[in-house]
Length: 298
Image (cartoon, rainbow, N blue to C red):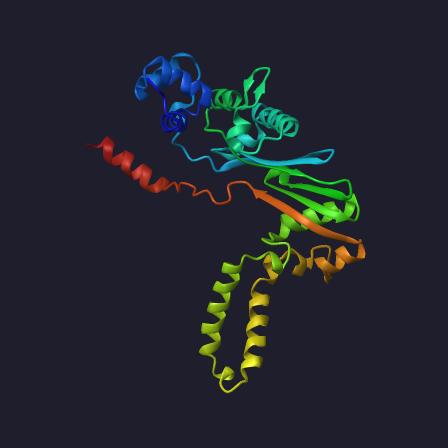
């Protein structure tokens, strides 16, 4: 029978096995999902199946450059203890080398990169089984620069945060300091012109409502009101725009001023922080102990 992409995706999500392995398993058992899971387990491919439902929100990020190519990626684990595990660190080294060499466009492509000891996905499944925690390659970013551009890379706290900056002009030291700025001050946009129109429009509406309820605005000319509105919107986004932030090494300067001194401009930046956006499971140990005691007395 013909195996669909939907079946392959479902099996992959349940087992963590690679796409080709999932397709092979489904083909071998005529599309039976449960038998396919067993097939993968029997062949040592789905050792991490029982861990697939756990929340992996710890781990490390990495940023690395090689010539005109840079990579930023995040590998998650269930606890922060794993970030010190030698096998886990070796896994990150292998992923880093493979990403720089192959430059995949997506996580899915990255997982299928073939290495001497198997695919990246195979290495992750093996590490999950050995270490005893769910491990996932969560996200990647591959960035290219031109000859006139400079990379700035910085990892904070051994990879809790990784930042990459692409700068036009300037020098490597200035680029690294801007990467440190990105890591520490969490900008969202390079400048106000990069803010999406719908985000700006939403903030304008919010500020209009606030101003409408302010008695100080009563009777002011429309032109003045529009100017005040523009100023309030700009102030709201000041901390989110890299150019408008205070430079972390000299609060008397803005980042835009520091860049001007170095004859440089920021083309783009990427900032990964471990676990950001992942909803972590809250453990209520008191409730857990109480439940265990109640069960023991039944």
